Length: 366
Image (cartoon, rainbow, N blue to C red):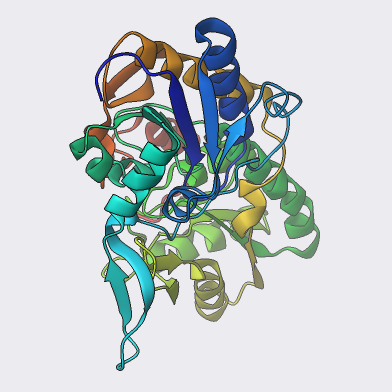
């Protein structure tokens, strides 16, 4: 579609995270107040686009939501218009259908000229058929995992780190009191950003991330040595995607109807059992899971989300097409949205924070 839009659609896709409402607020108010645009909300991500659950938003809808966690529009991490699950065949395998044309018809019906997509790599990859059909798609990078290619920071990440850090801080005293090893599992999929940052912030003794496979023997040797020093407890922060040398990631569930079917989880319990068996030190596992995805965003995420939402509309109204708003070198800018599709940003082995953590005595299991 050519020319500047008059009516835009906004959706939140993928897993929820703190700051989504702050972006919706910034998108709506910038569009309405600065450019007199009509804004339509699409419910539950691409699923709402598939099912034509699209409604007009007013400035009142966008008021009072800055501090609220979650998303007023709802979200879904299972609906991909290009591969939409419609049931099962006689063998019990899921059947898929490309419903892109249905989505385009719904956009035409509502006279929506452009889309603001708030999500992670899956949401950005889902934009491809709409871009090909001429719909201008502007992305805002959302994920607590901080693993979206092209941006140094995604909103939701800092709040997740804060929540995880507070939880590990609380576990510190119980680990010390009972002279235990406590293994704390945090989310992150295949990247260890949350584990690295919350592990450093909480002073975790061991940090295990997917990018550095761990040696069980070295982890046990480290906690045993701490015990000999008189430190009769240890805290281990482990990413859900971490694995041992030569081992595999622990899969909690496979959902064949989802575009991202693998659900990781459970590595903490396996590691806790291994440590107790090898070292004979009493060990417990705590899986924080969805706790770190919920709650109100901290101030840093509110600010970042507001900047992202505002920049998305500025980019759109400047006549640019198919851009992803990003934070690079502490500046808000934008890149081609397709650069972030179907990719994950991993932690490099020489990352400065890893070097700093090693310098203060943190073990990475290698």
